Image 1 (tube, rainbow, N blue to C red):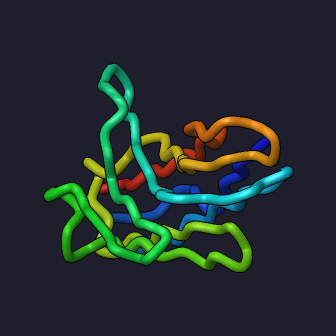
Image 2: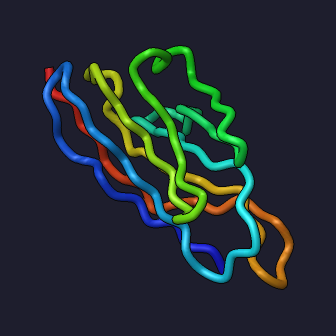
Image 3: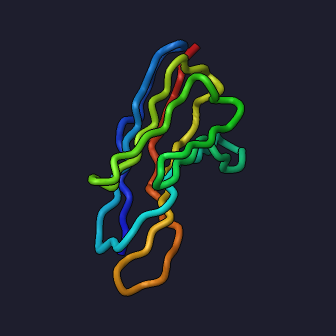
Length: 120
């Protein structure tokens, strides 16, 4: 129906930058909100940033001013530019899409996750 594939994670030093990408594919009729969550070991999955189809954005307080979410609707892709990274940003980052596959009901779809590790 809808598959999300993330890329761009890795190891970076304190203060460095990474850009995550997440591309949705499949028999997609429409995509509404897209966004990113993250989960550190032994923690719950927390919201990082969201973006509507109209490109309105929302950020967790911990990343405001450092992370920027964007999307390319023509490519069904969402991005997360992460600057001034800190060790506490270390987590598995998951993208999601609120999407409606052709012939199916609307639902929330998740990527497989990509590891981001920030060394001090």
